[in-house]
Length: 370
Image (cartoon, rainbow, N blue to C red; front, side, top):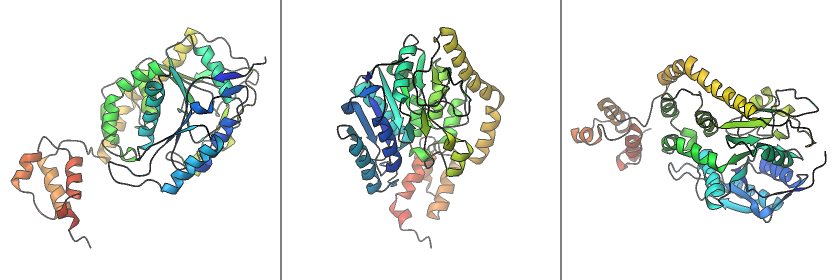
């Protein structure tokens, strides 16, 4: 089966931070896509910033961010750079890209990529085939074509399997709106701190109210939970049409990368493999499989997990007790607080807020610590 070149009319959103070599490899693989035509002006680099406004912490050097932007512009000179003046973290930068696609650009669907996926030559053509096949099924929120490298797919046909990570994916606007609304409490929780230091315990306690749960607090994992809770499916083809290259990053080390077999991931070169007719029954089965995964963990393992996690971690967003206030003053200021401090903060202020206030105070900064 031969396919004429398809024009990509969806926005292509790329998320990047300070890994210019990875970004260059991704961009070059995007540039080399076969069987499709891409409008470079519809490619957007969502470049995160270096310094967090919340904490003042610098997470990257300016030169590394400039190298990332330069790598993108060298491959896509007519592409658009949307640079953040501050560090938003992974979750904040991705939300910014979603809002660009679905609010500012008013797209009904968009393709999203992080900088650590190297596309095979027919990735976007395969995505367009999936887009066409899944058009009658609005309950499919996400789809992708990077495949499951742990499987041994048939060489002569493709099948749909549950989507794992949100890598190189398409997302529908209507599904995004529902997921974003459901995740509003999650975003409020993690938005109080820099994303790497989010309140994991608070997230897990929030999950406890649902009949589905997971033992991870990342935006990627919690979006998967949200989709399952809302009855939205996430699917991909079983064969690999891309290669994950994120050996160095927030979630992977070289040892873990190799242990999981990503160094042996080989993209398929042909996009004309038959994809059988997609049916309502098939989509329902895949959704049920994803929902059952989260339900089983909630019913069988979550309570024990939360008990163990709670025994080793504290919730910085909890309201202060008298003991908390006393301990903070003793440890940070070498004195007991005045009674007015208790009256002002008990029941109305959080541990995190008081700790930040003390650390920013002249009294703390003038203390002798050596």
